[in-house]
Length: 296
Length: 281
Image (cartoon, rainbow over the protein chains, first blue to last red):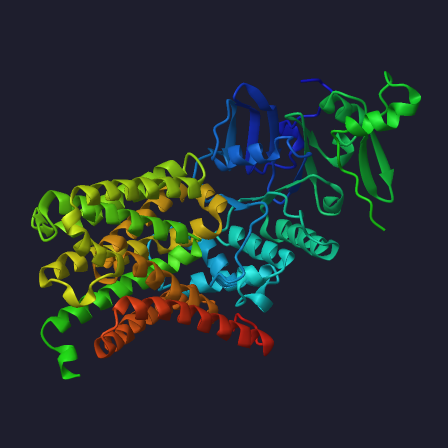
């Protein structure tokens, strides 16, 4: 890996807090193809980290490895100092694009309860008062009390997202992982979910890792980012990572970083080998970076 | 009407009620998981097992002290469930289900052609024979029914989690494959005990109608499960009385009321929607 790509050392973590997640040298090969190559980063409590990358960059694979659903070819993963395992109560997980049948007899409140005891056998008819209180508390923490008794399949995308976040948080994990939580949300719902995630990170003192293909909506709340491209990762603050040198090295082609009205656009630079008239088209075709977003 | 509750009719009431409870409980998850096709395939395929048993020991024969029909249904239903579970993890689930179904039906056809004289007796398996349940079948039925109810009650929360949020379940150690296999086994047991009473075709409608209606009425999952059982029991009770009075087959009443319950449930949901009452209430 090039020296230009920053990678986390212990020094980058503030204070003495142990890492909630430590990914070191993780490589994943699927039928001979390297999906992730030597990925390393650490997450500290109380920090929100964005995992940025385009489709196919390896975000979902990295999540599956962290969740213990897939074994890395090389490298180690420590969750709160322990080797990762299936059924890790230290991790709360919000999957991408959940389809919930609108007719399903399941209330928002039931989904949150399942986060507490969904893996247990039995009907779960007798819940302790403190379990019920915990569910109410979580519904309140994500502003879901208003629709706690609604069918979860009838809720809007943003409301469902909040219920799923409460589901993931109710068992008091140390690390919350969200796979593309902003996909398919309208602008208002997106802002609400981003604000909520920022608040949760602060109030609960946990690590939050959010994957997204666009970093811009997360800029106001995120502390650090892990930028994935071609299976490799660059880690650090936005200022450290989102620079043309770092990202060009990661993508293996020239990349420009443009800042427009507090937005960051990562675009493929002109390819010197193409004639001037074709440069624009050429760069668009080869544009692996995809973080632009045009909105009024 | 008094004879409705005497002699062999007592066995009918007991058997039909057990069947209804099991159909209501299992049907709740069949509808929730969208497994209607599986709930169709396992009973239909298990018919081949009954045909095989008839060929081996005759229609009224026994295998290890259990009625041959029940033993045959059991073997085919369990084999079908395992086949669907195993193939379904390796390919498309609906294709695996269809292949298992046609294989079992094909075998059933072959067995029937070898033992043509029994076809009439086996025909009753399609529509059930609630008024002719032998008293000796009640105990094995009760055991199988209890297994189904206990199975669903123990698997309730993992089934719920795995049906609604499979990836989250996996991450929390609830293996979707094991949950699916467990559920398919319950469907197989339910098939074995219900088919002789209400038949292959009607077991299907008794599982779907009440469960589909109950979910339109309540949004509380445990209440929906209880209501599904209640409606199923009511369905067979009404069916028995009407069938006894009219001398029309029970299957007709069960089949029709399955659809009626479903329409009534949709109407209830629709009425709430146009009155602006949130469905959740």
